[in-house]
Image (tube, rainbow, N blue to C red):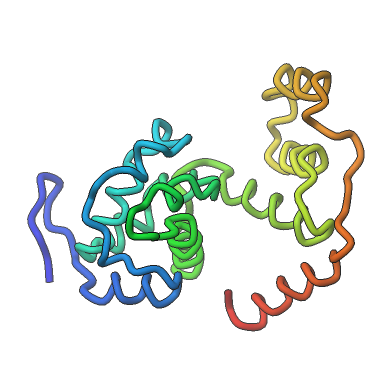
Length: 188
C-alpha cells in the first residue's frame, strides 16, 4: 500500500507497528500524540523529527522513512521521554529497536560516524561493565579521524572532574559480558 506525499508516493508497511511493539515490548498504538515526550527530549533540536513524530510514522507504517531517519541514531537513551509519557511507552527501547532494525536492513545512518560512536560506546560497556567516557571517546576519535574536534570541551570536563582519567569497572563485569553474549546469540 502507498500514500501520496509532497515528495512522492511512500510505501506503507502495515505490520510495522506490530513488529516494533513485539520487538521493543512497547505498546506503540497507545500513543495519542500528546507530545510530552518531544517537549522533554534533550536532543530534539538536532534531529529532523521529534520522538512523537517517529511514533506516529511507526503507527502509519512508514518503515523506510523511520529506519532512514537521523533521529533514531541521535537518541541518547536518557529515558526522559518514557518518564513523561502518560501511557508508559519507553521510547528509548523503541529507538534501540529501530537502530537494530536499520542495522539488520543494511541502512547506513544518515549522521556521519554515528554508528562508529554507537559501537565504541557498546565496546566500552562490554569490556568494563559500564562506559568510561575518556577511553571510549579516544577510541572513537582515533577511528573516526576527528582527533582534535572537541579538545577544548574535553579539557574543561577533565578540569572540572567530569571526565575520569582511569576507568572504573563494575564488580559484575562478567554478568554484563554474559548479557552481550546472550544478545549476540539471540540476534539482538
